[in-house]
Length: 285
Image (tube, rainbow, N blue to C red; front, side):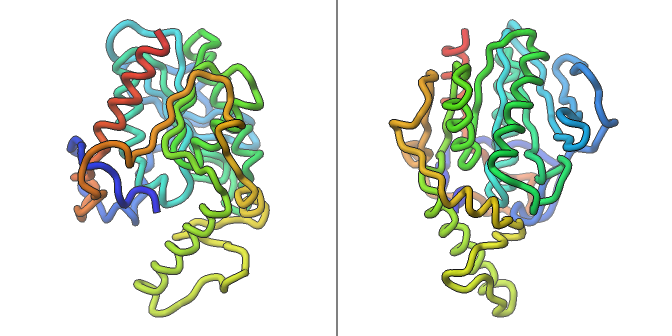
């Protein structure tokens, strides 16, 4: 499962003490229901956007260093436990991009995190619409139509699919994209069964051949499982946008992720984050 064998070229960042990473999802307190335009300079701004009946929770990182760019960046999360494991890294990435002058938007898909809806309502089509809503939001904020998508794992695959559909994505970062949806579901099944075997006193999940309905605490609806299973991302299908594709295994370092009990000492993949920040800084000049 992603997040268990990342490179060791990392930086330590202080944070409040907490439980084990795999048990904790960091959430930002909600502030109102709809703030209108983003507020503040150099400070994190939580807010809700999109359809009021299907609100999406977002976090805006305004430019906090250098000359503000008329570019927005939307970060597209992975799914489930992979998002929890990557949360700190994506937050650090957003911070670094903001320090180089970008307007950066992180957000939760519908049915995930602090956004509206339940996990059973989640579909890939809905998540693609959510990314489009996030794009519109960051375009308004940066006062420019120019934007980049940065996706990790399933978020990278969704970013590539949406870029191919829209045709107006000028910059694209695909970090460890999922190329085969069926293989990805199998990976989730193996991880889920392993956790149950080791921690749930022999309780078993779905039998071989049965559809996967849960993966490490996150529900997977039949519609979502069906769509993910059909995902195939091959280079010929990738959009024409100027893109950076990252495979974390190509970066040097020991195979380690987290050996700490608390989220206050989580390591982030420094070399990968630097590569993304540097590339976008040059490509979006």
